[in-house]
Structures are given as structure tokens and as C-alpha cells.
Length: 316
Image (cartoon, rainbow, N blue to C red; front, side, top):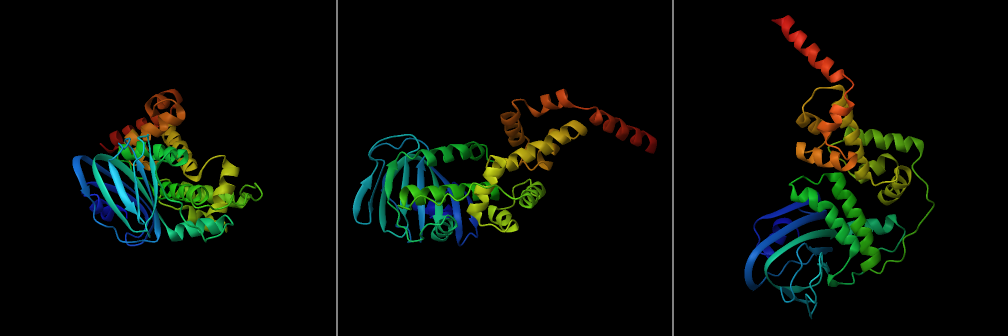
């Protein structure tokens, strides 16, 4: 229930999907479905799957807009609230009726992903989802808000960002909606010196985000969850947020010592385009890249430009 399969169920051919893993068996996927006004109609029955689907209504769903027979009982929208969240066990049979307009973000979490997160955190892998329909879940709502901006602007969610979202949502789902006991806290120790250096080295080599938490954790001989906890202790932030910081650091170096255009700086720093670069830079530095360059240029850019002009003249 992700991507085209999810779009077919809701009859929404225009959809957006990002996933972790292969198209056939992903561990995690994010799919956005939107529809204009339409009459109530029955959706095709979806095939059973060993996974959990989290559905977030980006626009408040009206009472009566969605109803279903889930595992033999009648469920539906009971109140219209922002970012209303639904947790569904895809191994349970469900018949749905839906009408438009609607705008949903769906998170697909495989059984394997949830089991691995449980093992990493020292809790039992024998869990069962406590289904919920159109409830208020502040963690899921905040996570959704954090990724809406790049999604709205058509920015790709890189592998590291998707990995981070999958781990947080998986852990939250296990603890809040699967009855998992409190995760083992363990000692609040950060990464060792060599692990810190190795992690920074790998992140700087993959500023575009084409790397996963699993790869970073493996390089540090740690499990994914343990690595993520140690990383936050060492850096005071998440792995993906640290990647953004490193992108900005590299961009500032290019801005101060070269005359490269903002488009070039954006791409070299790992951003998908100049607009995404400007938004992230302005959010972190409280100033636009062009204004920062004017205030912090050390003259190297001008020197480089003069040197290039001299070389061109000499060739003539």
C-alpha cells in the first residue's frame, strides 16, 4: 500500500512517492495522494501485507468523508481536526468508502523495519498494532509538518532524510500504538573519537544525502538505533540535521573564497537546486546567501575572477 498501488485504491493517478528499499519490497515509503471533489465511492480492496500504514489528513477530513469496515467493525471520521492520523494494520481486511476532496500523506512501515527497531532498542518483537482512526498524534503531526515544506516545493527527500523519518516514526509507533514497553535507555554516551571522525568524513563525502543511517552505523560498528542515540548525544542534533549544517558550512566556504554562481554553490553543496539552498541557508543563518557573500567575502572571489580574466587576456 504505497505509490501506484495506493493510488489505484483511491483512484488518484497523480501521486508522489519516496521510498527506502526496492520498489517490490520497500521497508519504508512516503506517498502523497490528493483528489478534488467527488461523490462517495467504494475503493478496491487492497491486498494484505505485513506492514503498518499511517495516514495523515493534511486538510481536516469532514465527518462522513471516509468510512470503512475494518476487521469486521465499522470505523470512520468522528471529528475534524488538523493532521488527523490513522494507524492501520495492513494484514487486516478492510473495505473503504471515500469521497473528495482530500489530501493525505501516507507512511508505509514494513514488519521487518519495526522488528529491527524493536531489537535495536531491547524490546520484544512480538507486538500488535492498536488501530486508531483520525486521532490527534502530536509526534506524527510534527514529523509531517517538518517534511511538508520540501515536499510542497518539489524537493527530493534524500535517503538519509527518509531513513531518519522511518526510525523516528517506527519507534514512536511501537511505543505509542503497539504497546511496546519503554525502550531501554542505556548509558547516555556519545560516539567515540574515531566514530565521530568517520561519521563526519562519510557525511562530507555524501553531501547530497545519498547515504543511510544503516551505512553510517555499520562503519561505526553500531546498530542503527544505538548509533542514532550516540550521534544525538555527540552532536546535539539528528544525523540529517547535521548533514544540512555541513552543507551550509561548505556553501559558506565556496561563497567566501570563489566567484561561483549561487546555482553552482547550491549543487556543489548537495542541494537539489538554488531555491532549496536559499531556503535552508536563510533558515539557518537568518540571511540570504547573496547578502552573506557580500558581508563575508574575503576578496578571494574577486582575486579569482581577476586571475581568470588575466588568463583569458593572455591567451588572446
